[in-house]
Image (cartoon, rainbow, N blue to C red; front, side, top):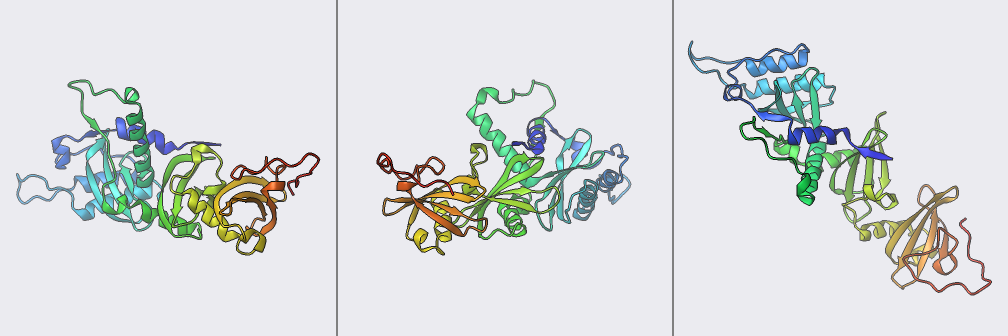
Length: 333
């Protein structure tokens, strides 16, 4: 159903082998480099290579912030990114023979931009999540970590977003939550570094209630799925607690007196059929219910656990005695 994001593979290359320290002359912008054929890369190289001399034999000056910004904007545009660059830096690292920039954008994530042909851009939120996942995997299995560089071989290092705005992942998640019309206040979030049907996935945690899995649709917009409805372990939300899921279900019971009588302490999404969605709730009074809801989360029917054994296997959060022989339990309807 899902697969590791393309950015994960690129992130691995970036984190482990993709970048080397630029020669001293390149870091000071004194050595000209071949100009790329594509206009954005050419603009970036030209901006980075321009110098200001105080005398005939003076050392070349580093590019100005304005020149870095112009070069980064040209690369972002050439890469097809919706980024209005507001700040940019030229990295001392190189990707092969291509210069590397970091850009902060007026809205959304920032990017690592490579002045290749064609230009490449890597989302700072996705890149940070990928690097964190790789670091966690290496810590969990040191034997699988990359071998140290061969003595005498050119040094390689990883590159990370460092501009303060680009380190603020929550700012981006708040933007995404607003675009997706989520009915909550985001307090955490991140990229999952995974895709469904080629569409990037993000998790948004909410303040005191159920969070969401966001799928960025290729056609534009978002698909939002409540964390409580996610049954695949590999996509399980990390920023939503069982108490927050229970709080959301309890709030949805408010319009139905029978359901609202249950002070929900635990909840479980059971699945959906043609009649609606089914949830189990464990109540503070040590009883439990299964509730059927419509697509707008209005309660349609309430089944006490004692008579709900035939609905999705019955209750699992509340232990109830088996029905007396010959008793018919409620069907899933």
